[in-house]
Image 1: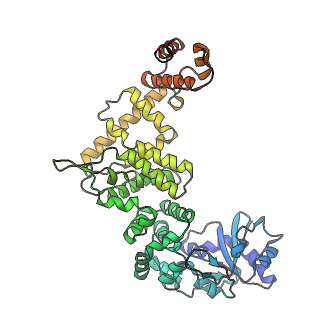
Image 2 (image 1 turned 135 degrees about the vertical axis):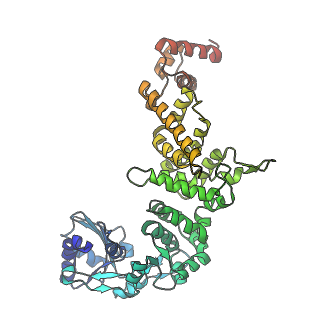
Image 3 (image 1 turned 90 degrees about the vertical axis):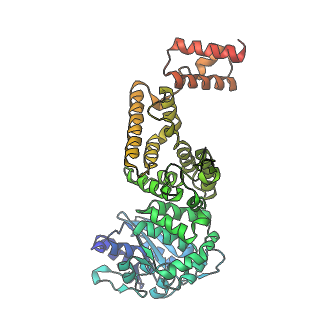
Length: 465
């Protein structure tokens, strides 16, 4: 059983609490995950001991102790590679204006479980385990877990009013664990979706990232869109439902984007990739703003990748994602359509170099995104696109073998430019450097003599010398 793996540390900890006259329970997500066979090394405990007593009990036992959550009754510790968070029984009251509760400590484990988000997280096991710990499940969490169903200990209206972030957590559990929502929970989510605006954007983006990194983010996104929650978190995604993609007329842009997300995930090698998944989901969000109907009845979305990249930056900034994530997702969205100009291999080597240089370190992700963006049901067309991209990748590797594409830079550096033209440091040196880089991209590596000729010709045209 999963609990046996953590029994030594859990029982040691329980013995210390018992000796101090307190009880200790494994609780919440740790119990849920143990029953699902996916218990990790981060464990949650609850106790009747107050925070200062918890600290005293941990002293001399834990490898490290921290109190960053002590205002909420939580003390953290590590022991033998296992991270423990021990929280005093809570009986909080919420003002229902913000998400922050008035922290009130409780006296019973049953009272603590009643305030938790979902019944599958409202179970506890009394420790020590060696005494066949008592299982506490006042809200039938085991039955809900067997049904893979999310329900709430209190009414969902009360639960979501107390903490609207629980609505987004529901979508996250749908993605991570394959749960469905009890009918009353879905109804409450639809009615109360706007309450998510009470939550700080940092907490919203943290839950959104966990959702997107789950095993089935499509299901989580669909729940957000179907219940109206996405209108307040990622409104650009439901906006795509009305846009028919001229390249994929059998599906709307929203459905197409969900399929691209799934196909991009299938191409991942290793850990889930948040940047790739965000780019796959959002790569076509510029289409609603660029939709145009032509007289023949067709639809076009010219430059939607340019508009989309700007919208990505605006939305991810609003959600306060790190600058690196914003830049990388926006770059992938901006570049995702460029391959469609490759045709039957008509690109020059210069165009291939620019593709590689503009993508930079994102090139492996761009490869995945472009391949995932093919969702046509026409097998012949899909195979043709695949072969064409295979050809582009082969050309990239051929040119990479001949040149150092990872470090494409001018054949003369700034010092050489200043020496040859007699220029002091300044913007003119930068202009000359950029010109040489453009020539390098167009023509490939130049000899020193060829580069000097190019530089002197630029100087004659731009400096009058």
